Amino acid sequence: MPFTLGFRLESTVGQGTFVADENARNALVVWGASIAPGYRPTDELTLSLYAKVTQEVTDSDVDTQRQQLQLLDANLRADYALGTIPVAEIKTGVGLWLYLPTSDVSQFETLMLGAALRLTLTRKLGEHFALDFIGTFRKNFHEYESPVLDASSSAPSPVFIRRGGAEDLPGTLVAVGANNVSHYFYNIGWVSWMPIEHLTVILAYGMTNSFTYATQRDSLSSMYAVGGAGQRDSAVGVIEVAYELDKRFGLGMGITTLAAPKSEDSQSFRFPFYDFEGTARNFTLFFIDLTISEPLGG
Image 1: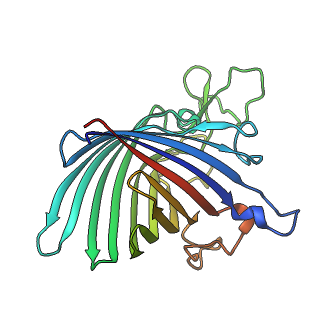
Image 2: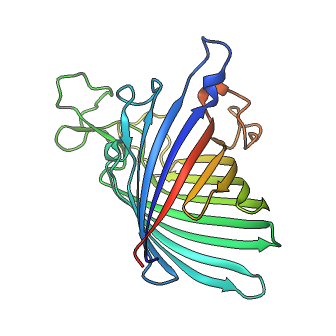
């Protein structure tokens, strides 16, 4: 079918919801829905659009309002299957994804466009196992190198403004002091086990290495300030069980952990698939989702 319409409904519960001490408990319950219409002009090329909304049912730690409905960044996708590498029997593909600043966060960061190049590799191991890898490089294009606020409102500015300082932007805009991410590398690999037909068990691990725009020291900078680009690293570990009900419907459930790859004191690496250091921070999430893929046209 040349046209498809994908839809996913998901729910997530954070591990902080189950903390026994009510003074340390940090409940997190989130639902999300995404839609992905696609078009395949040829067998190798797939063009698609992806959009998603989420909402935290519990009281959020970061949203402006309670139970605020959030639209994430929409993206346009073009994926092309290159073919199989001889002898190695590795299927390869490339993709170009464009990210549009439809989220409140991206608009706050003054993102104009994000562009990502992707490489996908797949290798089957017998009848029941497969190895997959996705490597991604993304470049962001911002109007300003830092998130900005409008200081013209009657409310007091949340940051101190040095007249003529780097944070004092044209007009009434003021930079908040945290540099935006200029580009990042994201690599993830996973092994799939299919013990029976339609059932798949997945174990995945990924790493993101993000680099901010370079900070420039000026005459008003502290003597202890250091210029240059910053680096922010994060790691994700996923354990998932997925079941294909039929060609249209699929169910998935599992656990995912997203945190810095090292411990708080940077002396050791975290266990990648569950956070044992601070459960109330909700680095580990439990999820369940329903996926629907509807073919359209003949």
